[in-house]
Structure formats: C-alpha cells, structure tokens
Figure 1 (spheres, rainbow, N blue to C red):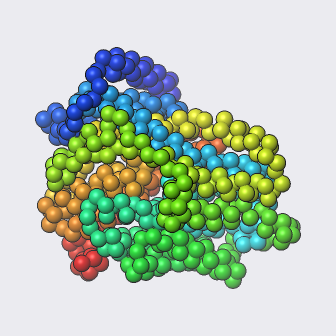
Figure 2 (cartoon, rainbow, N blue to C red; figure 1 turned 90 degrees about the horizontal axis):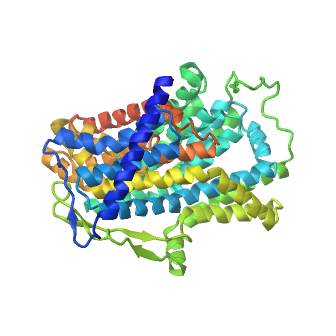
Figure 3 (cartoon, rainbow, N blue to C red; figure 1 turned 135 degrees about the vertical axis):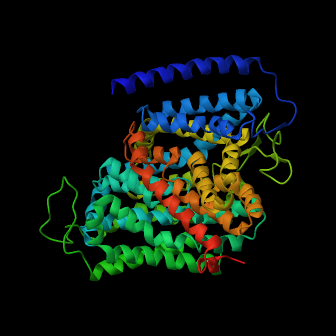
Length: 578
C-alpha cells in the first residue's frame, strides 16, 4: 500500500508539471485559422503510435483501478495526458485541443450530468418521504428472494430505461433502487453495469443504429436485423451471467427457470421487432414483455430456498409486507410517472416539438469544420462538425426533472422544501459532475485528435481474424466514449472499409461494432461514475472497475467469437443479412 501511495503521489506531481507546461504552450499558441488533418502514425511505427494513443486511457483506468486515485482526479489526469498526446505527439493545434476539451465537458454536463443530477433528486425525494422503504417492502408481494428482485430491477426494468432514454439513465435508476433495497454498494453498482448490456444497441429509441446508418450509408433496417441476429443470444445469456456474478453458480441454478423466462421473453421480442419492424421500439417492448413474463411466472413459482442478503434474517412468511394496496400504489407512483414521462420525452415527435420552442445551437469556435478525418479511416477527407446543442428542454434529464417535480407535489412536498432537497442533491453529486465533464472532455479529444482512429487501425491489422478484433474495436470505442452511439460514429466507417478489404460482410461488421460496444458499456468511466453516484459510494470507482472488468472483456470476447462464426462458419453464416 505504501508503494501504491508513493507511486500515486509521484504520478499526480508529474501530471501537475505537465499541466503547467500545457498552460504555457496553449498561452503561446496562435489562434486556429486553417483546417488541420489528423495524423494516425506520427512516430512512423504503428505500434508506437498506438501505444501513445492509448496513454490517456492507461492513465485514467490505471489510476482508478490500481492507484486508488479519486475519480475526479483520475479523470483530470487522463484529460491532461490526452492534451499532451494530442498536442505534442499527434500535432493537434493547442487551442483547437482546448476547444475540443471544453466542447466535451459541456456535453458531459448536458445531457449526461443533467440525467444523474435529476435521477438522484427524485430518489432523494422518495427516500425523504418514506416511500422508498415501502417500495422496497412491497417487492415481497412479488418475491422475497433477492436474486429475483435483482433480475427484475437490474435486467428487465433497467432495459426499459435503456430503450426509452439511454445515456446512463438505466444505471442511475437501477443502482439507486438496488442500494435502497439493501444491496451493498459494490453489488448495486457492478450488477447494474453488468445488466445494462444486451439492450444498449437499441437504446434511446434506436439512437446507436440510427447514428451508424448515418456514418456508413448502410440500410438502417438491415443494421437493425443484423444486430437482432447477434444480441438475442446474449439477452438469454446475460441474466444467467448476472445471477452467477451475484449468487454463484449454485445460487443461479436454483432459480434457473425464472432466469430463463426473463431472458427468453426479452430475446424473442428483440429478435422479432428488430428484424420485422426496426430499431426504434425494440428495448421498450422487449423489456415490458420480460417484466410481465417474470411477474406472471413468479405468481406460480418460487424457489425452494429464499436468498437473502448477508445482513438480513431469514423471513418466516413469504410474500407479506403489511402495507395497504393504496400505500403500495403511492410508493410506486413516482417511478411509474418517471417511466411514462421519460418514454414520452424520448419520442421523436416530442423532441421535434420541444426543439422548436428552445434548442439553441452553437458552433464551437476554432473547431467546427476545421478537423479533417482522412483515409484510411474514411474514403475521402471529411471535415468534422462541432456544434453544441443546448437542448435543455428536450434532454432526458429535463424529462426526469419534470417527473420528479410532479411526483414531489403528489408526495406532498412544498416548493421551498423541494428547492432545499435539490440543493442538497447538487452538493452530493458535485464531484461526480466534475468527473463526468472531464471524462467526456477526454473522450471528445480522443475523437477529434485522431487517437481513437490510431487505435482502431491497429485492430484493423488483424486480417482474417478481423471479425473478432473488429468486435473488440466496438468494445474499445464505448469504453473510451461512454456511448454506443459515439462508438458507432467513431468507428462505423472504419468497420465498413476494413470489412470490404478483408472480404466479410460490411453490414455484419458495422453491427458487430455496436454489439461489441454494448459489453464495453460496463467499464466506461462515465457509467462507473454514474453507478458510484447513485449508490453514494464516492471514491470507490476503482473497485467497481475491477469488479466488472473481467465480465466486460469475457462477454465482448464471446460476442467476437459469435461474429467470427457468422462471418465464416456454416450454419451460422445463414444469420447474415443480405
């Protein structure tokens, strides 16, 4: 521990000196006046350039996982490292790099941080009103088994929020629910992250695949169908994986019928809707089907042995909570309101109408249309746009705030009391907001400086093994950016070009980028911070990362293996979309 502490102090001191050098460099740099083209091999040796491009990620994740540095400090260290690599190694103009970082930080606060702030606000309202404890106890009416509660909340209920909103909402909601139910912070955080995987490719009403269509030019319905021929296998697997991680193999086997019902009732609608309708409502309908199927199944079946948390006594009576039906309805009403409002808020028609009221857009000075992506990442030089939309009204966090305010009034709160609780919530999440802003600044800088493309081109060297490593490229993209949508935008075009060069289906590899990315969702720093904030487990982000890292990598490898089979091996090649 003493060695780790000394190493941590030295690394922070080194990064601090680098930050001082950066300030001097930026101050002395001229304003950006002409376009700049990305450089993907600045050292002349692809492996060394790749190592340099990976340095910010290594600093960020290494300081979190091994040096136990607080998340907001680790994020700032990763950002400073990213600025150093972008400016001094990849030759990005210094002021352009700063503009990129500011752009990313703004995106981190709105929409991402805005979601977290308002979810925690709503959770705090229900706790202070005493309704969250009633909600917790009401679950005994369905099941007292903690494994089954985890299955319902983290997998089935979380998938609904992924489909309706995405962008960290499901992790924030389910982690808060689980911690309120008595799960330990590490379990609540890590298990929420593991559960939030299979639905991600169709999250936010299909946003990742809509973005993928935009950068690849491939047909949206074909992309939706191909993803729907990969992920349903994992929609069945992930619930078993989740329960194995929580209760061990024996504990999982004891409730395998319910786990199978949850997975199959999600996977079957996921396959049908993605193949015969499109990506828009896949998660919403599949999650509702899964929740309904599990609840109906548990009316007829319960495990012989009830699983309780370590700190709980074994109950004598199963399925009793002692509360009236009206009180139970009152306890669940805020979360039902949240579900409805978030779904309606996410509809394209709602967003269009609200955008007409207020959604100012700002071109990022010194960045918009001044960064060129060049071959082989794209077919021809392409200028990157950098326009920040201040869509405060259509942001998912605003819908959550609206739901919280409505729920607060129904719970009997007066406006001054709600303002007081909101201020307490801001103080509670302030370091998390700083962390997320720095994380997104790092992610945006990785994209605009070309660090991401350098790492992607290293994966593209895999030749016939490209279907496997191309899938891991999607995993890396989400780990870097925190978003399957962003990963698809970053690497979608590269996947298409590389697939054509290798001789495999470009639709398959574009879909693989999104499917591999869903497994990277659990280790991206943004999601980890969301989980630690929702569970009030600040400063333990490194422990959460260590808890989920193996699960993330192993599941991504399994996705890659399935993509390899679909690319080359009959009868799996019959799953290709033509």
